Length: 83
Image (cartoon, rainbow, N blue to C red; front, side):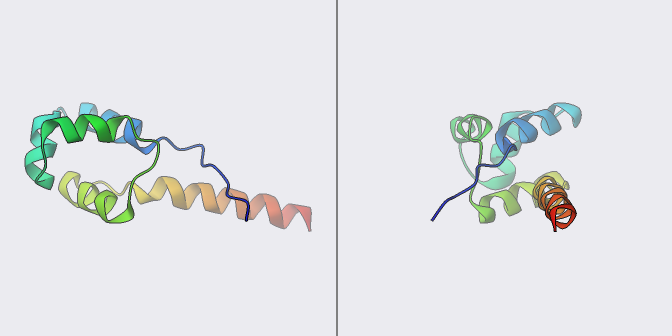
């Protein structure tokens, strides 16, 4: 089975949103009940478990799943054009 790689690097997007919100890794660590070191590891991950991403989205009041929804919609649009 072939798996497609996403163009999304969710860790970078989370880090950028934290910067926009003027919050740091320590704040996010407290909100999602983990260590600051774990948050730094999250920043370097291109993908995350959906439960962790949900916790982060809720803590930050930001829907990170929208990036994936947009990617799926674009791919579907491209496929519809091919048929």
